[in-house]
Image (tube, rainbow, N blue to C red):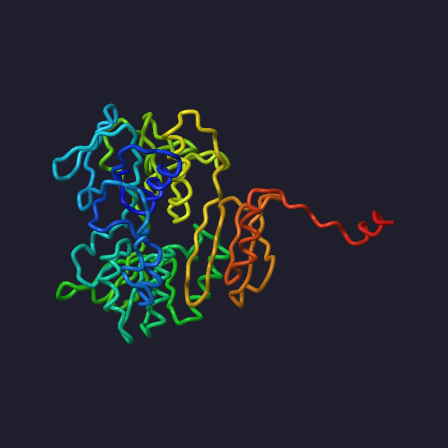
Length: 395
C-alpha cells in the first residue's frame, strides 16, 4: 500500500479480511500512522478533539503489517512492480495499491508567509489553531467545505471572518445554485462576510505575513490570518513515465484496476470509471476511501472478481452548529424538491431529481430522514396514488 492514510489502511484491512496472509507493506510520507482528516477543520480546531483522538488504528488491529513511514514514493517500474523511495530504497511487490491521496492546491503568491494556512495534515491544523484569537480577522480564500468549516470555527471563536469566492454563489459545484445560496445564508446569519464573484488583485504583506487583500472591485480586506481552500491536486507525479495511465489522477475501471495488471488505486488520487456518469471521476470523500478500498483489493486478489455497483458518493460537514449531509451527484438535475423542513430555518431535506429518479439528497439537521433518502438515490420513486383514485380502486 503506497499511502498510509484512510484509503491505504482500509485497503490493508480489506486484504486481511479477504484472506490475504502474505507480506503486507504500508508506505507513507508522513511520520504519523493513519489518522482521520475530516475532524481537522472541525473538532480539532474547536479543541474538542486531540491529535491522539484522530488516529484510526485499533490496538488489536491484527494487520501484521510492515510500516515504512516518513519517506515518500518517487517512482514506479510498473512492469516489475518496483516502488522507488525518496531515501534510495526500493520495494518490489506482487500487487500494489496506490493510495497517495491529494494535496492542497497552492497560491504561489502566498508561499512562505507565516500567517497563511492550508488544511490537510495534523501539522497544518496544529499551526492554525493558536491563530484563532477572538477579535482577530480571518480571511478564507475559496468557499469549499474545508474553508467553510474553518470559517465556522473562527466565527464561533469571536473572530471577524471574510470568505472570498470567485463564483457568484458559493458551494454551487457541490450543491447547485439554489442550495449553495441556502448554505451561504447560514454563514451570513452567523456573521461571516461573504464576498462572491470578485477576484483578488494583490496581497499586502509586512514582516513575512499577509496584512490584507486588495480585490478587483477596489475593496481592501485586512487580515491577521489567511486560510486557503481552493481545492486539491492528486499526488500522482511520482507515477509519470511508469506506464500507468494518468488524467487528473490514476485512471481506473469501476473496480479500481489501473491500466497495469496487479496495480489498483483508491482514495483521492484515484479516478474511477462511473457507469452512471459515463466518465472517470475522483471522489475526494471519506466514505469513498473507506468503501472503495475493499472493491479494489477484491479486484487485486481475484482477476475474476464480479463487478460491484458503486455506492453514491457521500460527505458531511459541520458548520455553525448545523450538520450538513450530501449524497449523490447534483450535476444535471432537472428539479429540486424540499421533502421536509424549511431551508430558511436551516433544517430541511432536499432531493435532486432527474425525471422521477432521485440523483442526490441534501440534509441540514435531518440525519434520520437523510439516511432514508440516501438509500433511495438512483432508484425510481413511486408516485403516490391520488386520494380519489385510491378510493375508487378500494371500492
